[in-house]
Length: 316
Length: 290
Ligand SMILES: Nc1ncnc2c1ncn2[C@@H]1O[C@H](COP(=O)(O)OP(=O)(O)OP(=O)(O)O)[C@@H](O)[C@H]1O
Ligand SMILES: [Mg+2]
Image (tube, rainbow over all chains, first blue to last red; front, side, top):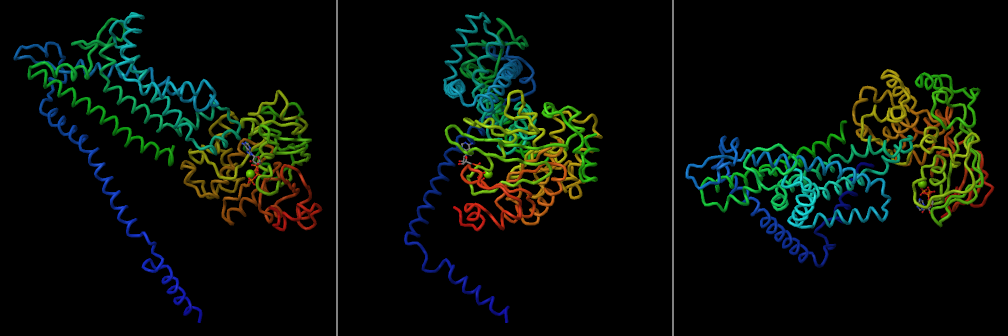
């Protein structure tokens, strides 16, 4: 009968494909050992990378939580660095200053970067000009920020006579952010499937329509990732701001000109060297807040954007 | 208004050919044109050669493609079928080095002449691709994409009708009428391809180009798409590329056989498979052509 024959077959099949059979490669043991060894190396490397991160987070979370208080969040640094043993004060001016400068700089860098990225990805046809732009964007990303700060000082503070100001600082920071926003936009747009663009083209869409209605939507998570990355880099910048923003102990919402402004990295950089407990506490707190901001940006980038790209796939 | 037209066509099996369109007008998407769509769609290819840079891909093609018929391009891989079909709605314009000599006229207008807007041309000549390429939008937004960007409807209700009728024509409506707001990417491959067909006919083209529309589909979906092509031929000029000879025999009216850029033989559908005159065609049909 038919059903009888089937089991015989499958037994035979199983036999010939058994892994314990004579087909085992000769260097099998060596391959397994090597595999194990490489795996071990990778784990060691991962721990070496993780250790400093965890250590930093732990140290500054520990210190930061010790020194944080409401008054240190709502008062300014005015007088905080004096040698008066009863000196008080907080970081309000520095927190708001950092947010103000970074906000201003993204208002410059994001539109420019996105437009630049759209140009590179969709309109340049990879001509000479576009490869020059791309090259400079890549070089710019590697220029030490202190050099950009110095150039900003010479050009903006002195030549254009902005003086120390939030505007000058924001312009220098936006130069720093630009390579990230422009390249992220370009790469995200280039990842849009060609089939989708052709489908839209075949419906009589113009290039701008395709970009507006489909490509940018599809590329949004990638573009936002680039923007957030550039934000977290610029939040932590010190040198360019020392050259262009000066520092102020007071809250200041003036962008231009000859008006110095406070920011967190300055507090980290200078208060630590002032031998009073209050100043050192404030520099710990500033560090803690900076790490917190960067952490929040990164979490938003990872969690929020993952959800966004999932939504892009499923809903809209 | 569009929807009514579409519906009429569907119900009455198409007899709009008496409505005339002026030869120099049809490349404009005026509402006039929309009202009289379906009456035309004749393509004449004359001495057409196509180049990618120095590479000549098509050599002196002469072919007439008649309205309301299904014209099939066949031939071995790389012979230039996709190039030819994409030449008919200027999809290749942006390919570096692409240029043509000779002419392609649609209802008497050379589509490569100056003054023809390639964007508007694509409104008259729709296209369906080998791989289903739904937009990452809802089913509804996929279908209304074309009408929306060309502002073809005046109200939401009218748009709803266009979407419904297009999906009905594509034979997809009954399956998905309750999920219009869901992502098109959730549909199966066969459903996605029919959605792409609905999307293409929503702008009411006169000509529908299909480049291997069923080659990525299972037999069931293939049959559905084939039935759909036959239905569509009632209202549109259909041009089909396929490797599947049974399919060509089932749905094709006219079959054009291409080999290395040459148009080797043209014939009526069942005939060319039974009595090919050219030895190359015969070899291809019997599977001996490499
Ligand atoms: N964008 C392009 N640039 C340069 N050459 C191209 C381009 N597209 C196609 N070709 C060439 O043109 C020739 C015809 O290609 P085409 O895609 O038209 O063939 P096909 O008949 O559609 O083949 P298939 O059955 O495999 O789809 C091939 O030799 C191919 O290499
Ligand atoms: Mg092809």
